[in-house]
Length: 364
Ligand code: UT7
Image (cartoon, rainbow, N blue to C red):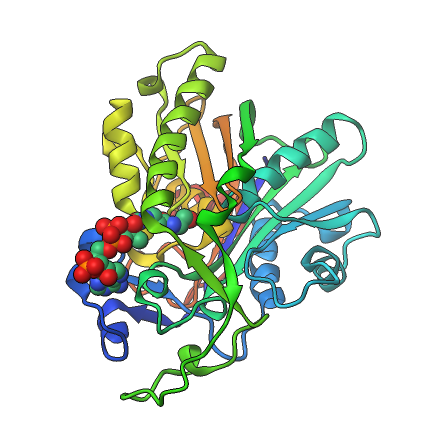
């Protein structure tokens, strides 16, 4: 993996703002999920634009021309169209050559499914440089009157650039990939049935506009919680076993950012200190398939990825699907496009775009 990119909308929506139109509280949301705020796409922002921003962040940071990308793989659980694929539209938007372009559907595991496919295509000689982009605008897939799901998700996009011409980056050591379709019912989408009653308080634009495909998220939260904690633990144990190490020898675990209670529970079961888990769900919420590249880009910028150490990416989500990738870290170019970056100062907003060789020097 030679490059990582991430992009988020500038609009920040706090729990307190959601409290004004939904029967919930900042206290409930923070104590059950760890989420304090999330990013929500402005009305004019399209999924394609968000995907392109993450892709360009990765390409620019790695110094790779879009013309060198011979395969584009995209993931989105919140698509704005059934076809043409986001990948085909992104290929045209970026000006990549006419190699294969297609979407994978593996819900929150999509970015890692894409990374595994990219590695297979490179190893088989089909491709040389693969761009994997996960982009989500979940705010358009939520029923904002359903408090059991509306408070959980956020919008964002992340990209992995895999392969390249003699470039160096993090190396894939082991993979754990799977699905259990028997659990599909636990996290899916259902037809959107907007309330016929007029809202008692005015709704913000993101909550009042039509849903993208007339469908909304539906979830059995407790079942998803059970599955997530169990599979996260199992993946880390299996990947550690494949590498001949104990789980606590992994330097950094970058899990799907579902919610911090899931991550803390899994950390406890594994006997790995929670500090070894990368967690930004507090600021971004659950961004589905975009969450791992977003969290990994941030972890590297914070100086948490060290050369030669093992970094474990763990995804799980609707399907039910899962994917773990164990990486041996090597210097990897990172680009972060965050126009709403007021707290962490990790993104490129308000500054000149960082040249790739400077990316290690940015402090938190
Ligand atoms: O990518 C994977 C995405 N999925 C997840 O990460 C979800 C995994 N599941 C969870 O994290 C938890 O199940 C939730 C955070 C979704 C819910 O927590 P819980 O402890 O399982 O709550 P619950 O669904 O059992 O509901 C407990 C109470 C209920 O009220 P009553 O019946 O006890 O009076 C709910 O109506 O909490 C109520 N509730 C809320 N209250 C305030 C549910 N949502 C909310 C809310 N605000 N947003």
